[in-house]
Length: 593
Image 1 (spheres, rainbow, N blue to C red):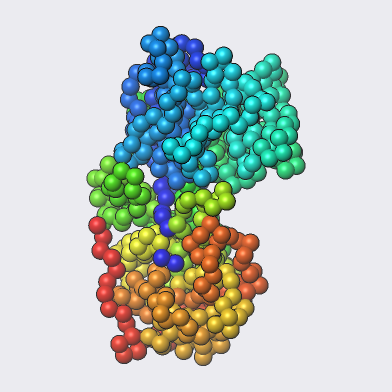
Image 2 (image 1 turned 180 degrees about the vertical axis):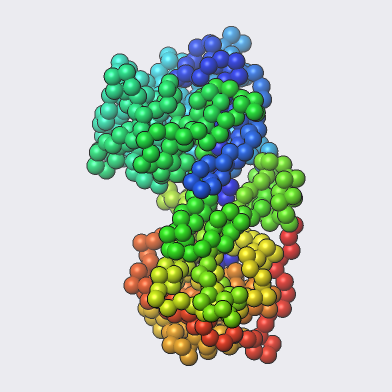
């Protein structure tokens, strides 16, 4: 209940005067490169790439970009004068620099007498892991603090020279230079080191959200991207690399992107080769050497939800298929303050804000056409929100708030009800619209846009049923399979559902004001009977990293979802709910800024 709607960013590193950058080296002659930022989106399974912005804009080596967990700060390797070194060494030493995407910070993250490369932010956000090149040219994996409280420490002293690496929990997969180069896996708890593959290239990446790592494998004169499951050590061949390219990035667990020349190319599982998705020569740019994608995933969820709506048999109701685009921008915050997305009044306003502040959001919307010619123009709306509060301070190494109960459970309910009713033998008399809303946690942003840009006239909207946090039973509702309805006493909707056999009771905790804490309140203030179905039992995992799927009760959820499907049919086929005297809430939704 009332998480940040995330945007996604793509960073490319491009040599401006010479060809593709090579393996890190403390020697002179390092390529002259800049780092560029571009927004990306997914449409019909293809990446859409917006014009890139040059972030570094200087002569010299700026390369190896990576994002923090929130996708708000970029770290990259920069060769620049360092006050710790005598003049003769300044041009061959590198540090890690940080670039805040809101423009509030562009400063060194490390200032040492050694050279650091290949920075990755640790899960707690307090440190970087880097490849440090010692004064004797040894290359080892180190942890470097981002705060004054910590000290630098060597993580893997037994393995060197390390060129590139990927973390999977407490294990690190490393590209170790040698003849041949090898892929070595170290368990940092037990200290065990295993060699997984030989004769490999430098591209070592974790597959997002999995325990799998991909790497570049040479076979004869050809190079391939292979995948190893660290649990079973099983290796799978995925795709041949682009010619001369061993750098790539995972967009999500199914899609990779790589650069060659001026083009960005995409590969998706089950494809046999790469597809060009963008040509950036218009920028103009040449010779892309590296690509990285920010780790936030709202648009991945958008794409997945749209596919589920399609497979359920719904008809699309967005402005781009099932997707209703929502123009968002980050707030202008003081240095160090956390930014929040804000809803813009129009796409014209979106185009007028600086590119680095634009946050493209999306609702996902589909519908079942009503079967009664006299009622099909009217519709009932079933909603849930698919955003959450994102990344926060780590607890026991976990900083990701998955929001399994709030509100993945409600989103799953919307999907399942859509499947049940779309494939059911009896069709609803009124049209039923299903919507997964964005930005509920930060001000009902997606719902407010929907109200101002309804897919069907609001005058034809009969009722809205929001589903929030049904993952765990609530004893005050009667236990497993039972639910409560916010604002039950405000309209006829609750009695109408209970008279139809739906196992619901009034909200037993009115002091919590749950009626006002979900997307339904925005519709209610427009005069539309709108309530939230929930089983939230005030568990302590609310808005914490502990809100995980393992704590959900599937049997309970299944019964509540079946009841929600029946409820939607009652609303689609029965009389229109009405407000009781003084039941409609006063006030308006938050104004757009």
